[in-house]
Image (cartoon, rainbow over all chains, first blue to last red; front, top):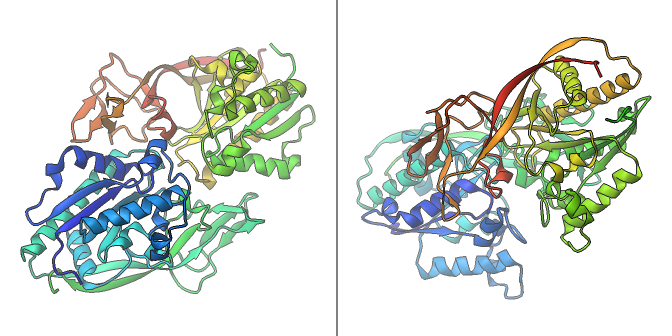
Length: 294
Length: 294
């Protein structure tokens, strides 16, 4: 565990059509005073300028799946984002960054979500602090098999902020303002923690843990059903066995066949059709965290 | 004016990331009986298969701006969509199509909108009939300077169905079902009209007429403000002088400076950032139409 966080990297535009993070980073590049903190050096980065320019998620391959050590060390791969990942990785090493925040948005109705790959004390304390200020925050523990390939995995500590629902290519002012507030509170927390100014306080933190991904029903790879209207935009709402899941193009309902209540997230995320993910299913958890027991 | 409509072309995927039309056309290609009508021959087409495959609006240039006669007749242009437009145009000529329906979706909250380039009796009667069945339908008269470059302009008669709000790349079941119903009612109308079975009935049709486009405030071409949260998703709602229009990245509100009440549409459409359009402004109109006075 890193003792002190003193170098923070903020990334927007890891996906070039997720506008919230892109415009927030542009704002910070123009107004660096907004992210100045006494004990921190904060670096704002636009991850994929070429994808941003073209307003697409990526140009050749998803940048946010290119940071696995095998890919970073492989000198034979040649796709644009594979090469870009190496330079971002090297930049983080050179600057000795020890905390990465990656700003994303989603077409799913996930509100303001913090995604963690690890539920260690450090991350849970940070999330508890933020959630005590912004009760609407959802914390999602998502240790997918690709977790080591994500941009946020470049450092031991890091997280993704995921906000929605917003269409790709669209800048939603409300979501922009919310993301901005949480980023600045997060920097405040790190700065206070470095100065041992976080009060001792116990907080009951609810969070969600992804345990499964569901694909669309498909026939010869082509999707054969849509997210059911009763599930659309219902991220984090309980889904019970027998509840509506999909509807076929001729109007037949397909229900959830699990054996207990689950909480769907990333429901109908545009970028996940190609990945074979109609939604992720999560379980609800709760933990009592002390803001500053580390 | 065409005396009888007997050949109808239905297009989806003119923009390859607008899923509603794409999947509805795929359904009709697999189930042609759904669009069989006794006096009509109905042709379902996927306009831009390459853009659909890549889940992008277009690959090189917006197909729905390539149908102007100057472009169709120009044998020197060579962009993919310019070439594709020529073959679509020729196909419509060869099949002697006399009515085109082009299915689109938008990230703006425009509900179920029929867009017309002309407000002649034929189109107004058709819209009156549909609006008497589906009161939620909005009719938008949008005679932009590009109107002759649109796919729907290939035939004297034709219209666009625009549905939203839905993100690019997302299939929304509710909007799919609504689009399907209106397309089938539209075919019913044409079929009944051909058989002189439309009842004489007077209907007061409200519609909207686009008269101006507003761009985002920009500094060196880069946008300098977002759609104001009080305007987001408020398509077709009255916008009065002094009402909130944009908000800058540092939180300053920019208000509407016009001199009368207007009705914004295409508010925050993702694809229009590159076209320099933050929204279109429309006036409200009303006309009494007899379903069958033609």
